[in-house]
Image (tube, rainbow, N blue to C red; front, side, top):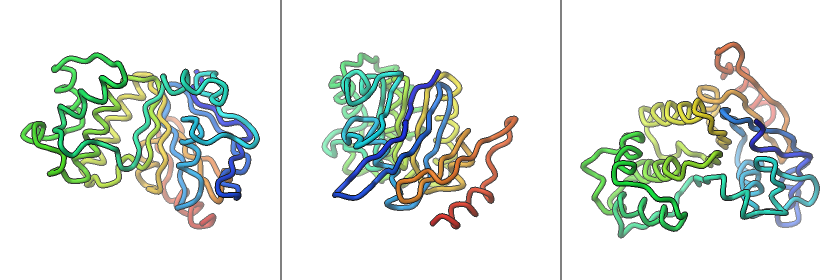
Length: 236
């Protein structure tokens, strides 16, 4: 099932073309990575699906819903994980998760929270420590746990491995691969060529607001990072 769709999407920001007619889709059970340098249009694409930026031409759809005509319904089926999640420093991991899940009207048990924190490999000794004493990588794990507990059909991830060490990045990739295998649609934006090739079925290469290339895995073989890296440098 097609979960996310951008059709001839044009968006202007500060009187310049941030996106210039891009087309792509993300299916249920698929990880799609948008790859590009700073200013390529990656985060703009995510914000358009969330309804924060309106197309000047074209459209974006979420589970068949045209976002600009029903923003609330579209947002209800998505969880957005920004690069720097807005969590409360004066609360611990448990308190942050409970608070934001209450805002989302999502009922979870203590066991659900424990399971999510274990899934993101956050050390149990830190669960009750205030987030002011967390590293960036630890904060990101709490945000990822929140995304899991929201249990929406679609995950939008903006540089989700920022601040994570190599071992934690591998754990994160395994986690979202498991989520996709269970039917979640995942759109991830990143500038990490090798990470994108490791985890995504398809990669869209953005440059100056245009989709200049798309790469797909075949027969369970991952996308070749050397091919994507060469294309990334050619289009930088």
